[in-house]
Image (cartoon, rainbow, N blue to C red; front, side, top):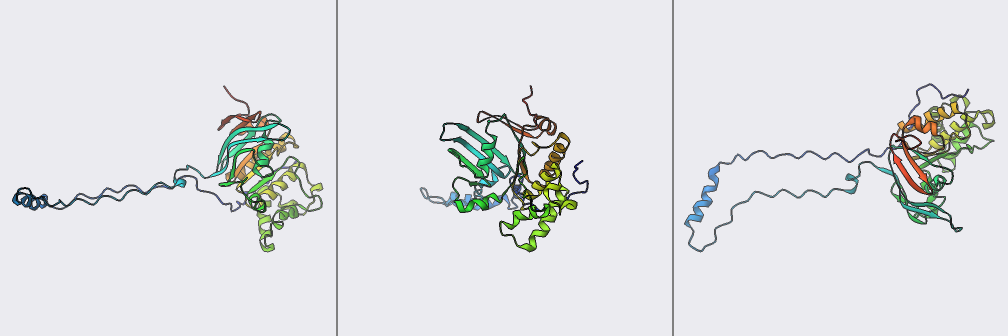
Length: 309
């Protein structure tokens, strides 16, 4: 039976955005004045002795406090937003409309289940996030960047902020576990001296240190999916997308994969998981975003797969 290593995983040093607005310093009340009240009398005497019709000298006034600095936009945001879909519609030349006016915001560190029947629009959302497609209307923002506005040569760099795993693993069959994970760094030009340590850290997280030199054909289905997860994690992504990651696994191994994704989320990685697994979603009780006919019909925290009364 394929199990996740019971050893305490080493946490990868992942970039974590601020969890809230900066704390503003408390307002300081100035101490009471120590000047004697008689200080006003000379001014009164001057007014009394002034010729009729003369304008009295202006009384000295206390200095006005400096105006408060305007709040910065980042101070008004309760948590850093990793992902935002704003009025997104996606239609195709054949007339099919996959998404209709979708608004979705995912803050840093969130864990979101994307659920819905086949054809609801889940796969389209993922394709938009990895910039495989662009919206017909609206905006898709990743870390504040509008993906439709970036140049084609920038797409690989943007995709490095995303780790993604699929239902069918997509491992290279002639490479070992270690080589499959390292490949994700090699293709982006990571120096060789940095690759080995990064791969070792990632393999420890998923519990595959002992299988590092095995080929995919020598692994169980759960081990293959954990290899895919290690590969998606090795470059420290801002957003981790799991597209039906348990679709080809039996219930017990599926639960082990879910536990691994929860552990990754606890390490500070934002997780978006598209799934039909109602049992897992209901048991975990995380945020659930439900799609139907290309529209978001429910967005609840600590929710079940189905709407509850």
